[in-house]
Length: 120
Image (cartoon, rainbow, N blue to C red; front, top):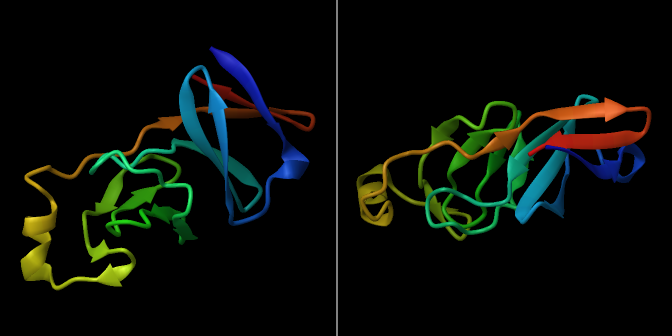
């Protein structure tokens, strides 16, 4: 279902902004004049991604450092930090709580004039 979410002018380059549509919390992220939509939920423990940093086309979970490609949702690093502090590789398995790496959900985005639509 294609839903109008925002005005293009309300989005800042390299930043995320949180919206809700059809019961789903979404982040719209504008990079290089392209807008991406990802679910505002890290698949590790379900915590929100909205305060995560946008780095090199990825969003970094602010709680456990997991990284996700904002275009595809692909997980590129799984549980590498606690509250922003890097942890040694040997201790990562303890913090995964047995969960395997998973992608974050992404949604198709279209822009019509100044209106940003997300297909949910």
